[in-house]
Image 1 (spheres, helix red, strand yellow):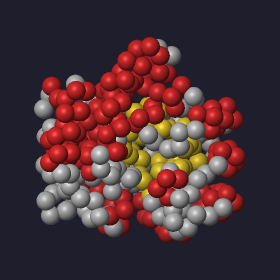
Image 2: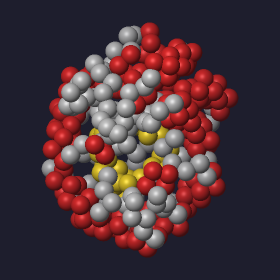
Image 3: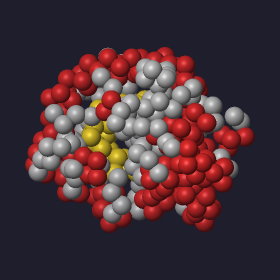
Image 4: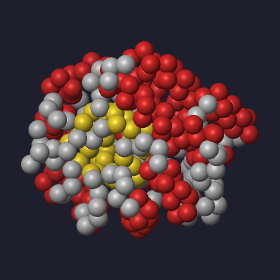
Length: 301
């Protein structure tokens, strides 16, 4: 079986909620319509930005069903599966296999901090039990567990492990993975590092910023892949202050949710505890940065 390739601008989609904290399906439809009309290459739901950590199984299932309904087969759908238990992850994945999902994004076993053999066996065991392709998610800052390059290379040889979302800033690591793997997607997990990551061998980005700047992120990636680096640098320099503030002014996805509400993409910026809303001072700083960036979406909302 030939491996599928995931590339380009993949949005780490927020999970819109109403004031009571329930998933807001009307805002979800609005978000999906925006991405289907604005050069997004794929949708990732129930990732970190999608607040998987506060959603129970039934909510994840409902979110997926609504996403499938509103998407209407327009974009590939990637589903984030977060669990520190190998067999719990398998159980959840198996329950979703009946749906039209392009692949899973599977994070390293957080909190447990297994050694590299344990990490390898975790993803290998998952691959044996599911028939949907798997993207590995390496986020050592959040999970406390790093997948070292040699382990990634071993995992890349497993047929239905098709790529990795990598959040480290180690350029040599990206180059090594790119040079040593074959038909393996290498996706950036940090918007503030898109340019360096991509020219080091990356294929695309799973982006927070794309929630509100899909056209800009798509163009940036296209230019880099075409080796039009000077044009890409100009776009990236404009986006960089906003990229940085989205994860520094408050925990993700609090800032991006607030912006989405501010510009009319969603009805509420509600998150669930322990995430809390922005102060007025932070809102002003954030919105001024958005205005300075002059995004396409500001002209249409």
